[in-house]
Length: 144
Image 1 (cartoon, rainbow, N blue to C red):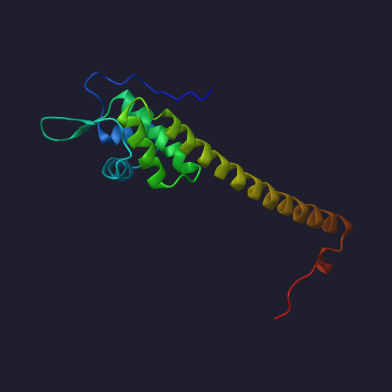
Image 2 (cartoon, helix red, strand yellow):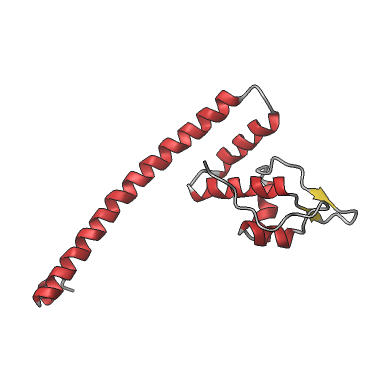
């Protein structure tokens, strides 16, 4: 099971956006964007002066969004997932369907990457073999 990496404890009053950015590995701009785009399911607290204060739950959710983005999940899908989570119980089948659809897309991308990696490995083997044999200068090169 995937565990969310936690750093030092978050104080009860929360942490600043700069510290949240540092702890989640995303920029301050990205944090603001996630909030504006409707990707954040939690209500990020604000100080009396209007500055954001992030709690552990906020950071955990941001890490989930970041992982989804890293797998190529579109913003609209993350937003839909966030909407479903925010709506509460009763839509678990919809959440599951969204995640299963994305999983299938990720598996397709992984298969494509594996094919590409095999081609790269083959080319590396060819070059190593030709360099060892001393005839690498005979490898194909386009003529101008």
